[in-house]
Image (tube, rainbow, N blue to C red; front, side):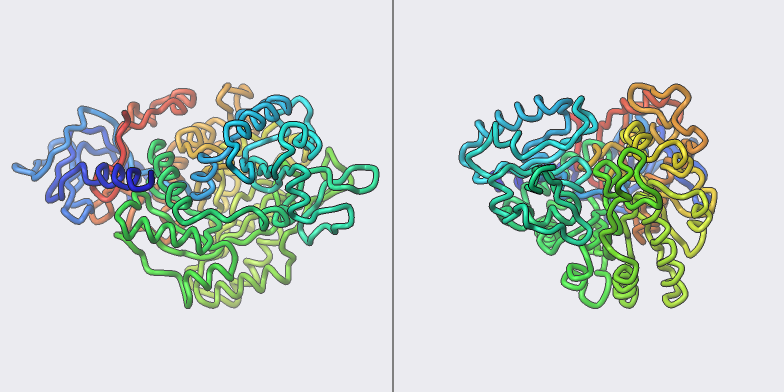
Length: 550
C-alpha cells in the first residue's frame, strides 16, 4: 500500500519535466507587492531551480523558446496559500480514523461509532475525533456509559473537535487507571458523576494525557501514510505551506523521511511540542531550511490555557454559562516565563496558545518581560488570541507581536461564544481588525483538523464575519472585518513573514519560490458566498505541478 502510494506521489511530482525558463502565460495573476498592496500580472518565467525569474505584465516580451510552456487559458493565479496554524499529522490521522465532525446529535454519533467498530473488528482501540456537544440538541458532554452501550469489548477514545477534551468508554478509562480516586492533574479536569465522583467519561486538557499515554503508538509507516494523506488534503485546498503547531520527534522524522524520498510536496514550518522536543529536534537552535525550503524547525509551541468550547479557556471572570469556573491555566506564569526564556536563549521562536482573556493578558505580560532581556527580531507569536480584554488590545502593537488567528473559528464558535462569555465580553472576541490596528501583524490559518483546511472559507469569513449560511445578516461584530486585501496578505506574504520565510516564498516576485495555485474565479470580485465555492484546478510548488483536480 505504502509503496504504491509513494510511487503515485513520485509520479505526480515528476509529471512536469526538469525546468529551465518555464513560461506560465495567459493567466490573470495577483500577488502582494512590496508595500502590501496588490500587483496584477499575466505571466511568470520560472528558472530551473524552481524560483521565479521574471514576473510578466501585459505587453512584456515573452521568452521566445521556453523549455516548457503552460497556457493558463485565462485562469486566475494566486500565490500558494499559507495556513499559519495547523496540525499536519492530526489532519492525516484524522482522515484515517473515525471522523465525527459531521454528527449533529449524540444518537447520530453513537450510531456512527457502532458502525465503525463493527467495520473494524481487528482494531484493538477505536480512535477518532471531531465530536462537538455544542452542535447536538443535548448540549452536554457525552458519557462513558453511552459509549459502553455501543462498544463495550475494547477501549474507545475520541478527541473533541478542538483537541482539548477526550471521550472515553469504561475500557479506555480502566486502561488508563482513571477511577473515582484519581486526582485532576494540574491544568486538567476529569468530568465526574454527581454521585460518588466516578469518572463520567470526558477528560479535559492535560487530563487527556492519562488516556493518550495508553493508546498504542503509530508505526513509522502509519505516520508516512498519514503525512501523504494530509498533503493531499492541503494541496486540494490550495495550501502549499503550513505552520505545524506541536511537532513531535516522530512527526519530524516522518517529515524528514518524506524529504529524503522526494515526497514532501508542501512546506512545513514546524513548532516543536514543548521545549524537550525543541531541543531534541533542533539542538542548539532552529534548523536550517531543508529540502529546497520545504522544512524547518522554527521554534516551540507552548500552551497557556484550553479551549472555549470545553470551558478550558482561562477567563478573567467566570463563564457566563458556568459561574463556578474561570477555565484552566495549563501553564502558570513562572513556568511560562521559564519556558519562553529557555527557547529565546537559543533563538527559537515562541508560539504560545492563548484563548481566554486572562491567558492573553498573562502572555502579553510575559512577552513584555522577555523583550526586556531578549532583543532582536523575535516575532513572538500569540496563537488564537480569541478573547481579549479591550483594555489589553493595544499591547499587541508592541515588541513585534504576531497574532496568529483563525477566521473560521469565529463563524463556528459564534453562538457558543455568546453563551460562554455573555454580552459584556464580546467586544474583544475574535477582534481581528482591532488587533491589526495596533500595528501587530495578523496572520490567518485554520487550526486544522479542528476546522477544515480551507483558506477560501477563512478568507470569506474574514471579510464578512458571516458563516456559510450568510448569517448573521451584516456580520457578527462587523466592525472587526478586515479588507479583502488584508485577508489575502494574512494568508500569503504575512504568513511567510510569521515563519521567518519572507524572501523564500509567500509572494510571486522574482527570486522567490514558484508556489502558486490556479483557481476558477477572481477572489477579489467574488462575493463571500462565491469565495467559499472557489475550486482549485492546479497547484505548483517550487516550479513543479504537485496536484491537479481530477
